[in-house]
Length: 81
Image 1 (cartoon, rainbow, N blue to C red):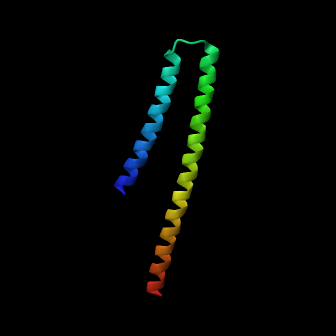
Image 2 (cartoon, one colour; image 1 turned 90 degrees about the vertical axis):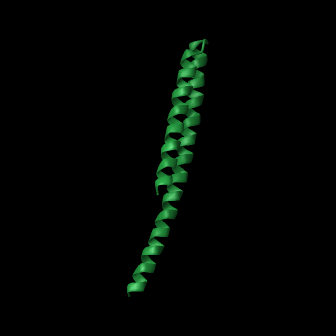
Image 3 (cartoon, rainbow, N blue to C red; image 1 turned 180 degrees about the vertical axis):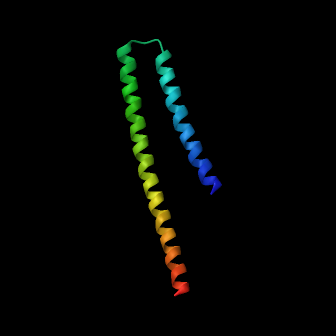
């Protein structure tokens, strides 16, 4: 279980670091404001898409774990019946 938590913490840190790095890079880049806003919109769309993908993967993983736990619980109940 400890490995699962470290993996999610690492993933969260990776996403947060990417967002902070992208925003700072765009804010300090010497270019017109219109171009910067366009790039920010593009990056935001990218991150939203990544977030939706991660959400769906998480839902699927949770569903699978729930099914595994339910199967083990049913098996344990059958042993006691």
